Length: 341
Image (cartoon, rainbow, N blue to C red; front, side):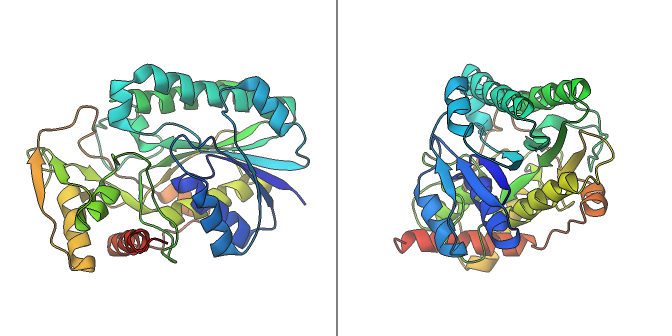
């Protein structure tokens, strides 16, 4: 049986993707995580949901010698899905060197391992932050990449460039670049979801924590050139993102790719403002949120949302969940946490 390596598998998107792999494919899964922003509890939740086991490894991908040691014994690797990276825009503004070191060194080491071991299928976790403040919306995969607004976004731009040069030098090496927009929500079981170890920077976990009195909610800016003055994002359910990874993997394995470095936007195609997201949560939860308006946050893009036509047509991918579904699942997950499960 062939194996898929998932880096950052205890993290938010990685854990949901492992669930999709275990539920809907016949692959063995090996997950790598050093738990810098996750816990082993995610693995327990995956096993409970899927009733399946998988191998787990705990080490830092920036340690090349350890990476080669840990992975050298794994046989029949069909592909690598690379999630592991630091991902907070505000944190990257405060500590840019940590982001450049972690996000680029880990990618470089993993690419070298893949090439050395003739692993030709690789999925890279990129981001809509590569577009910066685009001139025209929605953005397509051909939209010009503007100057990154944060070190985090810049590491994703640089990661994509590294991969393109590698793929040019190694024509048999295939990498799908998946540009996520704003993954939110939780598994429909309510048994696993976003669980940042520190104070969250993403909107939805702040919303759900505020609803149970564990956080305070600030809307960063309400005077932008948008329909209600708050930033606009393309929120997409995390399970839809996970499904896209499985489809992208088969896209490469079945040799359907037209180039060896295809790019796909993963978003719903709908721009939603921060205030609209808040109101959606209030509707599905029945909770009125107390929030304040604060100054704009450094590094934030004003508005970005996807044209997802290419992913729909090439990957045969279709987002299943709407905004209310996303908020309802996130609230269900928060209630699971409150129940102590």
